[in-house]
Length: 317
Length: 109
Image (cartoon, rainbow over all chains, first blue to last red; front, side):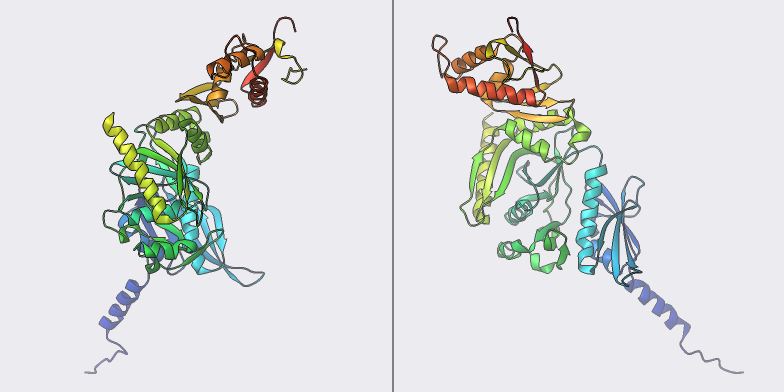
């Protein structure tokens, strides 16, 4: 009888495969973030892991045909030999980036594009949204006015987070619904927000076209109850930059607020007259202001004073 | 030639709202929605007062006189201040330019 000696025991081969399987990441994962269904597919190592680090709580077992598919594929240019990463959103090329540090923020941007184009059922305002005491404060505005920084600062002060990108208004309930994506914080705000106690430096840094270096901030890393629920709009505040100045808040007429909200809508053309009536209805029940931001803490105090006044007004009605 | 505010004397121009434009009043101001151009317009209190008098019966002078009285600038017995007339002229020109009113030639044009 001879003893057959194998180079390695079979059990070790199996263990090795199990270890390699655990280290490698799945090529596909599905998520439901608020009303948004996203499937991320990637042949680039680390991409899904990075996304999952932010959105693990929202993972769901299967995708849906009406969800959004984001695919990240590496390709090498035949002409230059350089590697590029293509981010494809529902079959259409959305972004091409050269470096891995740029992939995650452009995946998020691709999801935002699909939401703006295709998410049915909500009037979408380009805004950050926070809530307190059952009332939502909507901060509409173009990029770089400070919507996300203001939202993050309020989060640090105990407000609940609904979104830093979209105010999704339900046309039936008139309530704003959370789309609690990770806050995308720009480098100019890192130190300010860290001083407020936010774990901003615990997130890796990524580079995004037009925004520069950003860090994603998972609201659940701030508090386990950080994300708010659908609620009525009580404040509409248009922030404007006033770096270094003392913050100032002034009333804005509701009619002018409606006009500016209509121009901040991504999908107003889908709602038309219904959209105007929805905005008019929302504005009628809200207090409207312009905020020239300055010192972040004092800006938040101005917002909180507005909220307190709004709540007093409601209590007296 | 389509009448414009600058081509006709005030006495013969009768601004008239286009019927399909929707008005939404908020406090003392208004928002207009034009479904043909899918456009939203904001009217402050003065512009709203002017818009409401664009009924095809008031001429520009009449609008100016009423607006001056409503806002306490001049009583009905006093001559309408020039600046009010100019404001009405400018506002109606802008409303017409945005396709929200028509400028109809009244009798005696």
